[in-house]
Length: 289
Image 1: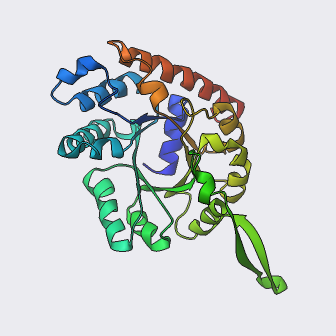
Image 2: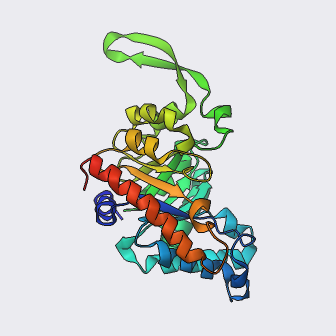
Image 3: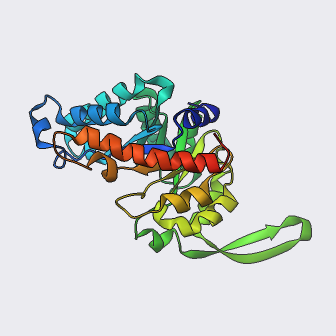
Protein backbone atom coordinates (compact mmCIF):
# COMPACT_ATOMS: atom_id res chain seq x y z
CA UNK A 1 0.00 0.00 0.00
CA UNK A 2 1.49 3.35 -1.01
CA UNK A 3 1.15 6.69 0.79
CA UNK A 4 -1.81 7.96 -1.22
CA UNK A 5 -3.67 4.66 -0.82
CA UNK A 6 -3.13 4.80 2.93
CA UNK A 7 -4.44 8.36 3.07
CA UNK A 8 -7.48 7.40 1.00
CA UNK A 9 -8.16 4.52 3.40
CA UNK A 10 -7.96 6.91 6.35
CA UNK A 11 -10.43 9.29 4.68
CA UNK A 12 -12.78 6.47 3.69
CA UNK A 13 -12.95 4.99 7.20
CA UNK A 14 -12.65 8.39 8.91
CA UNK A 15 -10.11 6.78 11.17
CA UNK A 16 -6.38 6.44 11.76
CA UNK A 17 -6.77 3.67 14.33
CA UNK A 18 -4.32 0.77 14.41
CA UNK A 19 -5.39 -2.24 16.47
CA UNK A 20 -2.47 -3.96 18.15
CA UNK A 21 -2.81 -7.72 18.13
CA UNK A 22 -0.74 -8.37 21.26
CA UNK A 23 -2.58 -11.64 21.59
CA UNK A 24 -1.35 -13.21 24.81
CA UNK A 25 -2.78 -16.73 25.07
CA UNK A 26 -2.96 -16.33 28.86
CA UNK A 27 -5.32 -13.35 28.50
CA UNK A 28 -7.69 -14.39 25.72
CA UNK A 29 -11.19 -15.54 26.75
CA UNK A 30 -11.11 -19.02 28.25
CA UNK A 31 -13.87 -20.37 26.03
CA UNK A 32 -11.55 -19.98 23.02
CA UNK A 33 -8.98 -22.37 24.43
CA UNK A 34 -10.98 -25.27 23.03
CA UNK A 35 -10.51 -23.99 19.47
CA UNK A 36 -8.02 -25.65 17.13
CA UNK A 37 -5.93 -22.47 17.15
CA UNK A 38 -7.14 -20.26 20.04
CA UNK A 39 -4.97 -17.25 19.21
CA UNK A 40 -5.94 -17.18 15.56
CA UNK A 41 -9.61 -17.58 16.45
CA UNK A 42 -9.28 -14.68 18.89
CA UNK A 43 -7.54 -12.52 16.26
CA UNK A 44 -10.09 -13.37 13.59
CA UNK A 45 -13.02 -12.36 15.77
CA UNK A 46 -11.26 -9.14 16.85
CA UNK A 47 -10.48 -8.26 13.22
CA UNK A 48 -14.02 -8.97 12.04
CA UNK A 49 -15.50 -6.87 14.84
CA UNK A 50 -13.17 -3.85 14.52
CA UNK A 51 -12.66 -3.75 10.74
CA UNK A 52 -15.20 -0.94 10.15
CA UNK A 53 -13.33 1.31 12.59
CA UNK A 54 -9.64 0.50 12.06
CA UNK A 55 -7.31 1.15 9.15
CA UNK A 56 -4.36 -0.92 10.41
CA UNK A 57 -3.51 -4.03 12.41
CA UNK A 58 -0.21 -4.62 14.18
CA UNK A 59 0.60 -8.10 15.47
CA UNK A 60 3.38 -7.89 18.04
CA UNK A 61 5.62 -10.72 16.87
CA UNK A 62 6.95 -11.50 20.36
CA UNK A 63 3.56 -12.81 21.49
CA UNK A 64 3.70 -15.37 18.67
CA UNK A 65 7.40 -16.28 18.68
CA UNK A 66 7.21 -17.01 22.42
CA UNK A 67 4.94 -19.98 21.65
CA UNK A 68 7.29 -21.61 19.15
CA UNK A 69 5.91 -23.30 16.04
CA UNK A 70 2.30 -23.06 17.24
CA UNK A 71 2.63 -19.32 17.77
CA UNK A 72 4.33 -18.74 14.44
CA UNK A 73 1.53 -20.66 12.72
CA UNK A 74 -0.99 -18.38 14.43
CA UNK A 75 0.87 -15.36 13.08
CA UNK A 76 0.96 -16.79 9.55
CA UNK A 77 -2.78 -17.50 9.64
CA UNK A 78 -3.44 -14.00 10.97
CA UNK A 79 -1.53 -12.18 8.22
CA UNK A 80 -3.04 -14.44 5.56
CA UNK A 81 -6.50 -13.56 6.88
CA UNK A 82 -5.69 -9.84 6.94
CA UNK A 83 -4.32 -9.99 3.40
CA UNK A 84 -7.72 -11.19 2.19
CA UNK A 85 -9.02 -7.66 2.82
CA UNK A 86 -6.59 -6.10 0.34
CA UNK A 87 -6.44 -2.30 0.54
CA UNK A 88 -9.03 -2.21 3.33
CA UNK A 89 -6.28 -2.76 5.90
CA UNK A 90 -2.66 -1.72 6.40
CA UNK A 91 -0.60 -4.43 8.12
CA UNK A 92 2.39 -3.92 10.40
CA UNK A 93 4.73 -6.58 11.73
CA UNK A 94 5.80 -5.20 15.10
CA UNK A 95 9.09 -7.06 15.06
CA UNK A 96 11.63 -4.36 16.02
CA UNK A 97 14.32 -6.04 13.97
CA UNK A 98 17.78 -4.54 13.44
CA UNK A 99 20.99 -6.34 12.59
CA UNK A 100 23.88 -6.36 10.10
CA UNK A 101 22.95 -6.06 6.44
CA UNK A 102 22.78 -9.74 5.46
CA UNK A 103 20.64 -10.59 8.47
CA UNK A 104 18.39 -7.59 7.91
CA UNK A 105 17.91 -8.75 4.33
CA UNK A 106 16.57 -12.07 5.61
CA UNK A 107 14.28 -10.32 8.10
CA UNK A 108 12.95 -8.15 5.28
CA UNK A 109 12.28 -11.20 3.10
CA UNK A 110 10.47 -12.87 6.00
CA UNK A 111 7.97 -10.08 6.59
CA UNK A 112 7.67 -8.49 3.16
CA UNK A 113 8.20 -11.32 0.68
CA UNK A 114 7.14 -14.40 2.58
CA UNK A 115 4.34 -13.01 4.77
CA UNK A 116 3.39 -9.94 2.71
CA UNK A 117 3.10 -7.41 5.53
CA UNK A 118 2.87 -3.79 4.43
CA UNK A 119 5.32 -2.59 7.08
CA UNK A 120 7.77 -3.74 9.72
CA UNK A 121 9.21 -1.95 12.75
CA UNK A 122 13.01 -1.77 12.92
CA UNK A 123 15.67 -0.47 15.27
CA UNK A 124 18.17 1.99 13.74
CA UNK A 125 20.90 1.67 16.33
CA UNK A 126 23.23 -0.48 14.21
CA UNK A 127 23.20 2.21 11.53
CA UNK A 128 22.16 2.66 7.92
CA UNK A 129 23.26 -0.75 6.60
CA UNK A 130 20.86 -2.45 9.03
CA UNK A 131 17.93 -0.45 7.62
CA UNK A 132 18.66 -0.28 3.89
CA UNK A 133 17.71 -3.91 3.07
CA UNK A 134 14.15 -3.19 4.21
CA UNK A 135 13.95 -0.21 1.85
CA UNK A 136 14.51 -2.31 -1.28
CA UNK A 137 10.91 -3.57 -1.42
CA UNK A 138 8.50 -1.43 -3.48
CA UNK A 139 5.31 -0.24 -1.74
CA UNK A 140 6.58 -1.55 1.60
CA UNK A 141 7.26 0.54 4.67
CA UNK A 142 10.11 0.57 7.17
CA UNK A 143 8.98 1.98 10.51
CA UNK A 144 12.02 3.25 12.41
CA UNK A 145 12.07 3.44 16.20
CA UNK A 146 12.62 7.09 17.12
CA UNK A 147 11.05 8.01 20.45
CA UNK A 148 9.32 5.10 22.12
CA UNK A 149 6.59 5.10 24.78
CA UNK A 150 8.43 3.20 27.52
CA UNK A 151 10.06 4.89 30.53
CA UNK A 152 13.47 3.54 29.59
CA UNK A 153 13.43 5.62 26.40
CA UNK A 154 15.02 8.37 28.50
CA UNK A 155 18.17 6.28 28.96
CA UNK A 156 19.33 6.86 25.39
CA UNK A 157 16.70 8.39 23.12
CA UNK A 158 16.30 11.57 25.19
CA UNK A 159 19.98 11.89 26.08
CA UNK A 160 21.74 14.89 24.59
CA UNK A 161 24.88 14.19 22.57
CA UNK A 162 27.55 16.48 21.20
CA UNK A 163 27.59 16.53 17.40
CA UNK A 164 29.88 18.46 15.11
CA UNK A 165 27.88 20.51 12.62
CA UNK A 166 29.34 22.30 9.63
CA UNK A 167 27.55 25.29 8.11
CA UNK A 168 29.32 25.08 4.76
CA UNK A 169 28.13 28.37 3.26
CA UNK A 170 29.37 30.32 6.24
CA UNK A 171 32.43 28.18 6.85
CA UNK A 172 31.37 27.56 10.44
CA UNK A 173 32.07 24.40 12.38
CA UNK A 174 30.27 24.20 15.70
CA UNK A 175 29.38 21.72 18.39
CA UNK A 176 25.66 21.32 19.01
CA UNK A 177 23.76 19.25 21.53
CA UNK A 178 20.96 17.17 20.07
CA UNK A 179 18.90 14.47 21.63
CA UNK A 180 19.65 11.08 20.13
CA UNK A 181 16.12 10.63 18.75
CA UNK A 182 16.53 13.93 16.89
CA UNK A 183 19.69 12.64 15.26
CA UNK A 184 17.86 9.44 14.27
CA UNK A 185 15.08 11.49 12.65
CA UNK A 186 17.56 13.73 10.88
CA UNK A 187 20.06 11.19 9.58
CA UNK A 188 17.58 8.48 8.58
CA UNK A 189 15.95 10.78 6.04
CA UNK A 190 19.03 10.21 3.90
CA UNK A 191 18.18 6.49 3.78
CA UNK A 192 14.50 6.60 2.85
CA UNK A 193 11.70 9.07 2.14
CA UNK A 194 8.08 9.87 2.94
CA UNK A 195 6.92 7.03 0.67
CA UNK A 196 8.77 4.19 2.39
CA UNK A 197 9.66 5.21 5.95
CA UNK A 198 7.64 6.00 9.04
CA UNK A 199 8.70 6.60 12.63
CA UNK A 200 7.60 5.22 15.98
CA UNK A 201 6.83 8.05 18.40
CA UNK A 202 5.13 7.08 21.65
CA UNK A 203 1.93 8.82 22.72
CA UNK A 204 3.38 9.13 26.22
CA UNK A 205 5.99 11.47 24.71
CA UNK A 206 3.43 13.86 23.19
CA UNK A 207 5.27 16.86 24.65
CA UNK A 208 7.98 16.16 22.07
CA UNK A 209 5.58 15.91 19.13
CA UNK A 210 6.24 19.46 17.92
CA UNK A 211 9.97 18.73 17.97
CA UNK A 212 9.44 15.49 16.04
CA UNK A 213 7.38 17.29 13.42
CA UNK A 214 10.07 19.95 13.00
CA UNK A 215 12.36 17.17 11.72
CA UNK A 216 9.82 15.01 9.84
CA UNK A 217 6.84 17.22 8.95
CA UNK A 218 5.55 15.01 6.13
CA UNK A 219 6.20 11.46 7.32
CA UNK A 220 3.67 9.10 8.81
CA UNK A 221 4.14 8.33 12.51
CA UNK A 222 3.15 5.10 14.23
CA UNK A 223 2.05 6.15 17.70
CA UNK A 224 1.67 3.47 20.39
CA UNK A 225 0.78 4.18 23.99
CA UNK A 226 -2.79 5.53 23.73
CA UNK A 227 -5.17 3.82 26.15
CA UNK A 228 -3.70 1.46 28.72
CA UNK A 229 -0.32 3.28 28.73
CA UNK A 230 -1.94 6.65 29.34
CA UNK A 231 -1.11 8.56 26.15
CA UNK A 232 -3.46 11.33 25.02
CA UNK A 233 -5.23 10.90 21.69
CA UNK A 234 -6.13 14.59 21.74
CA UNK A 235 -2.59 15.87 22.27
CA UNK A 236 -1.07 13.53 19.69
CA UNK A 237 -3.72 14.39 17.10
CA UNK A 238 -3.49 18.14 17.62
CA UNK A 239 0.30 18.26 17.50
CA UNK A 240 1.10 15.34 15.23
CA UNK A 241 -1.36 15.49 12.34
CA UNK A 242 -0.21 16.75 8.93
CA UNK A 243 -1.94 17.28 5.59
CA UNK A 244 -1.97 13.52 4.88
CA UNK A 245 -3.10 12.84 8.45
CA UNK A 246 0.35 11.38 9.04
CA UNK A 247 -0.69 9.32 12.04
CA UNK A 248 -1.43 5.69 12.80
CA UNK A 249 -2.41 5.60 16.46
CA UNK A 250 -2.21 2.17 18.02
CA UNK A 251 -4.37 0.77 20.79
CA UNK A 252 -3.84 -2.82 21.92
CA UNK A 253 -4.97 -3.89 25.38
CA UNK A 254 -7.61 -1.16 25.61
CA UNK A 255 -9.45 -2.77 22.69
CA UNK A 256 -8.61 -6.44 22.42
CA UNK A 257 -8.77 -7.19 26.16
CA UNK A 258 -11.64 -4.82 27.03
CA UNK A 259 -13.61 -7.96 27.88
CA UNK A 260 -12.60 -11.58 28.37
CA UNK A 261 -16.14 -12.90 28.32
CA UNK A 262 -18.25 -14.32 25.49
CA UNK A 263 -18.94 -10.75 24.31
CA UNK A 264 -15.24 -9.86 23.91
CA UNK A 265 -15.50 -9.11 20.18
CA UNK A 266 -18.59 -6.95 20.60
CA UNK A 267 -16.93 -4.95 23.37
CA UNK A 268 -13.75 -4.58 21.27
CA UNK A 269 -15.89 -3.17 18.46
CA UNK A 270 -17.49 -0.69 20.85
CA UNK A 271 -14.09 0.51 22.10
CA UNK A 272 -12.75 0.82 18.55
CA UNK A 273 -15.86 2.72 17.49
CA UNK A 274 -15.45 5.17 20.38
CA UNK A 275 -11.88 5.94 19.28
CA UNK A 276 -12.88 6.19 15.62
CA UNK A 277 -15.55 8.78 16.41
CA UNK A 278 -12.98 10.93 18.19
CA UNK A 279 -10.57 10.55 15.29
CA UNK A 280 -13.30 11.58 12.85
CA UNK A 281 -13.70 14.83 14.79
CA UNK A 282 -9.98 15.56 14.56
CA UNK A 283 -9.93 14.80 10.82
CA UNK A 284 -12.87 17.17 10.29
CA UNK A 285 -11.18 19.88 12.38
CA UNK A 286 -8.06 19.52 10.20
CA UNK A 287 -10.30 19.69 7.08
CA UNK A 288 -9.02 16.34 5.81
CA UNK A 289 -12.49 14.87 5.36
